[in-house]
View (cartoon, helix red, strand yellow):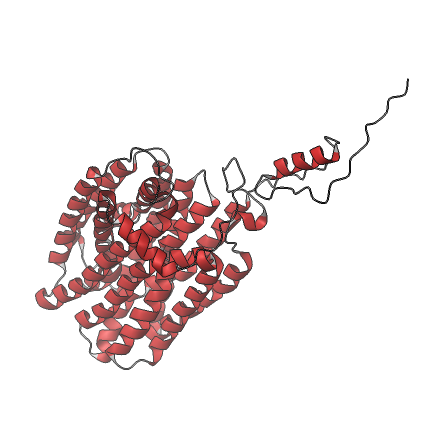
Length: 461
């Protein structure tokens, strides 16, 4: 008896294959339409998910953008010497830069939803390059505020941690804490790569070649962003890493500025937003505003060579990488608010000891401070992003942008007030002690945060 093969039905022209299902489900649909299960070729999934390549490009991009962040502490004394500007005046430009860095972030996150990550980041890097390059022709303090404060501040704000949060939220479901830690560490990696070079240039060639180097570093990353970065996993037909189902790419969201402000008003009605914003403001005050801006001139006040002080700041970047990645790993496993409380408490203790450690030479207690402080530098970021995601769902990247704005406002305030304190008292001791006390307050605020009753998909949920 001859066995006959069932006739194969042709695929109907009007039989759509859903675009919002995984590859295996699309194959199943084709097999049903063809009436021949097992006869459709199943393409082998890549061993390494595309999300990891996107994360790698993001990492390199943030490293390139981080070059400018290494420069302010190196410029204070050269600009004071060349132009006769006070440290308070120079601090105004740094404050504007840091404040705009934060205030731009939520709007940049909304613009990424409207125009895509790739376009926003490419434009931001170009603005950073233009602002840094123009500083070499400045002659007055208002030009420093415009070029370094406004232009570099706006560009860097679009490259802020909200960028890392957006990439993580779109491309990853699993390992979000770890990826957040890795991308956050990219800023420290940029500091590690560029700070020794920039300090050598400032000492041996002057501050202008250092500014040009920053501009070129930002421009060099633009081709990588344009050619390799993708806005959403759906652009390449993939589900996010760790997701069980394919996630369609959402349509562009119009009214980016209006959405950013709307999300702020809704978030501002909740207690957790203000607690997160308060702790992160103290985080910025005790890192970017204080140590990154004033550590080098403070060490030089104690007759430590500028290159030695810059080397210590670069070492902070080395251990920051370790600490931030470890913090991301811990965030996947432990309660975020308790992690924040521990991080802020330890940072405050270390700052209280710093005035006693500054000396003309590098000695073992100073090295211990650098290692200890470096491990804690931005370890606060992964648990803060996790709490934003937990409370605010799909709007978490924009909410984190506003929380980051508070971080930079705190940083800008201390960058300015630290310079004023140095002009008034002749040293930075009062600034170190005040920042240590503020970190203790941040630890208490973190413990007040409570977990939501249920996870939200958005602020409207």
